[in-house]
Length: 310
Ligand code: CP
Ligand code: NVA
Image (cartoon, rainbow, N blue to C red):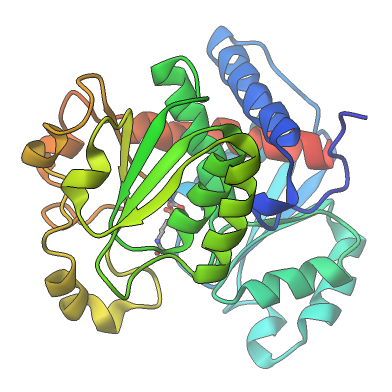
């Protein structure tokens, strides 16, 4: 059965390569259909609740508009405005929301909270980012790489910067989808050891190489895609100045890109701190695909909702 109906989308490691392929293919199809004006009503009568305890531009707007484009309805639920703020438990929130909704998307700090919500909600729960992973992002990311490079298997992605939530989900999806990945990060900012180990177990099966180095120049050598993210993630605002120091040699700039393949593409999940992890010249330059990537969040999220909820 090729259906993902009823599944949660909590982390990439819950999905096989075949299932991720289904999602990416559906995303490409939905993008093409949208451009050609072919409408879809696969989520007609369905509602998605979107709980946010952290800010969002792309995730919020793309899920909401995506739901609308598929004939459904999305509600923005700031965690400040629902009873969660006054201490209503996640299980009771789940038991209540499942009576009204067909799916829940949640962005928050602790992965355990997302897992708990999913455990108590009988409807699909989609992880819109936690401190540890950002799984919806990387579906759009590999869709974007495939769109621009024509394939995934055998490519090399270099990730420069913090071994954070985005890096973790990239490790998990690259290991499954046949993309070699090298992370360059300062000592002490490596990806989580258990995430790396389990991605390496997958990589061994798929023949993918996953490396963690400290030299960005070494990482970008022969890269088909270079990826970066902000140095201080949401919740790390107090570390901003310290991190600006620690990461100063991890900027994606024109000089660094010279060491990558000639047709390298540059990705960034956004929002960017221009002049820190990426220069204006690169993000606005000919190798950058960051706004295609941002657009593809819409198509990828529609695919996720269509397959899980539709
Ligand atoms: N990339 C991403 O998740 O963006 P937002 O924080 O704006 O949703
Ligand atoms: N690593 C960033 C990603 C933002 C989309 C953060 O967690 O803030």
